[in-house]
Image (tube, rainbow, N blue to C red; front, top):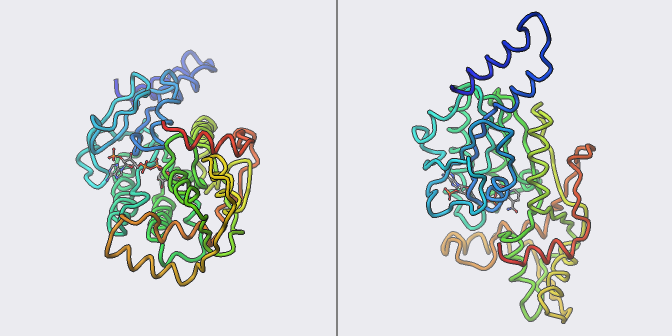
Length: 333
Ligand SMILES: NC(=O)c1ccc[n+]([C@@H]2O[C@H](COP(=O)([O-])OP(=O)(O)OC[C@H]3O[C@@H](n4cnc5c(N)ncnc54)[C@H](OP(=O)(O)O)[C@@H]3O)[C@@H](O)[C@H]2O)c1
C-alpha cells in the first residue's frame, strides 16, 4: 500500500469508535518514507548507516552510480535508486505525500563552477519542483555555513549554496535548512585537504590565521539531522550547526600538524587578498587539479562558526575533544 494510503488509514484509526487512539500519530510517523539525495557521499553514507529503518516506511537513496558507491553499512531496507537530480524522470515516481526528502546531494570540493551551479542550483530547483508537484511531506535541505559568507566573488560553491537555500525558502514546502560548519570524521574531504597543508615542511597560513572555525563531527551532524526529523522541526528555519570547539584556523592546522607527526611549528603567513583572484584565475585554466582551491581560501578569510545554534539539547554537539575529532578525521573510513 502506498505511504499516503497508509497515512489515511492511520488517521482513520484516530477517530475509530469515537475514541482517540494515542498510537495513531506514532504509526503515522512510522509510515513516513525517506528519499535521500547524496546518500553515497561522505555525510550521506554515515546518515544511511545511522537510520533506524524500523521508524520509517520506504527508505530510498539516489545516486548516479549506486553500484559503484553503495554505502557499506546502509540499513538493509534502504534501496538505491539510479538517478540524477537534474533528470526528474529518474526519481519522479518515488515522490508522494508520504515522503520526506533529505537533500544532501551537491557538487562539492573541486567540482568546477559550472557543475556546482548545475547541481546545487539547477538540480535543487528541479528537485523542489518535483517535490511541490508530488506534494511531499517536508524537505530537509543541507546547505553550508559558507552560504552566509559576506562576499563570495571567488567562491562559486558558496554562491551556489546560497542560491539553493533561496530556492528552498521560495518553494512553499515545509522545510528546514541546515548550515553545517566544516564536517570532520573519517574520510572528511575538507580535513584531508587541510591535513595535506598541515603536513608541508613549513606551514602556510593565509592571512593572519585568526579566522575562526568550528569543526562538527559527521556523526554529530547525522544525529542532528535525525533529531530534526524526529522533532518535526520543519518551520522554515535556517539552523547553523557547528561543533563544541571554536578555534582559529591556524590553531586547527597546528593541531593537525602535531597529529600528523610534524613537530616543527614553522609558520609562514601569506597575503590572502591578492592570492584569491590569482588562484581563481589559475583554477579556470587547470580545473580542480590544484592542491588548494580559491574557495578553500575563504576559510582563512571569514569565520565559519554557527551563530544561531538552536538552544535545544538534541542539537548540541557532544564531541568535546577537538584533537580526538581531528585524529578520527585523519583515519580512513
Ligand atoms: N563535507 C563538508 O565539510 C560539508 C560542510 C558543509 C556542508 N556540506 C554539505 O553537505 C552535503 C553532503 O556533503 P558531502 O561532503 O557528503 O558531499 P560528497 O561526499 O561530495 O557527496 C556528494 C553527493 O552528491 C551526489 N550528487 C552529486 N551530483 C549529483 C547529481 N547530479 N544527482 C544526484 N546526486 C548527485 C553524489 O552522488 P553520486 O556521485 O553517487 O551520484 C554524492 O552522494 C552537501 O550538500 C554539502 O554541500 C558538507
